[in-house]
Image (cartoon, rainbow, N blue to C red):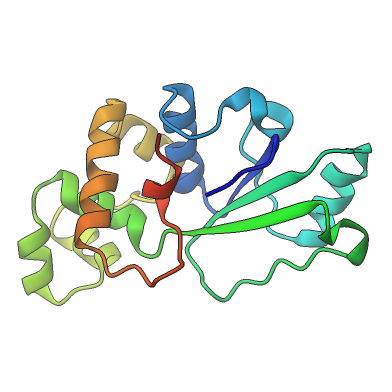
Length: 172
């Protein structure tokens, strides 16, 4: 993955934002917080609003927009004025966030046998109801190496379509 000098890291949800914050604050990503626009995760899913808020600042350099989202069908169309300056990279996390917890808990085989969706399994079997909240994810993965291990294990077991990026592609 080739990234431009400046990066806009857009996270769809708060769990994704917590994961990126943990990884970037522990120097585990292929980019640093200093390279990120506003040096923080951006929570703006709309391309037009993103343009208005961030691209009208007169950037002369190329920008990589790294979108962390759980939907493969969400569009992000920039206007023609910015198309040539922006490289959009989608990092798909469906259903990765819950799967990170399932892997970390060591219950992947039990999950597979259950026939449940990852979110439902986390609620009913692991009794974790706030799996998507920023504070829960930040506290649960307070050891960044635990998070990295779960991301790598997810990558090993997941059927990620060819050409699609996952969180593991952002790791150093």
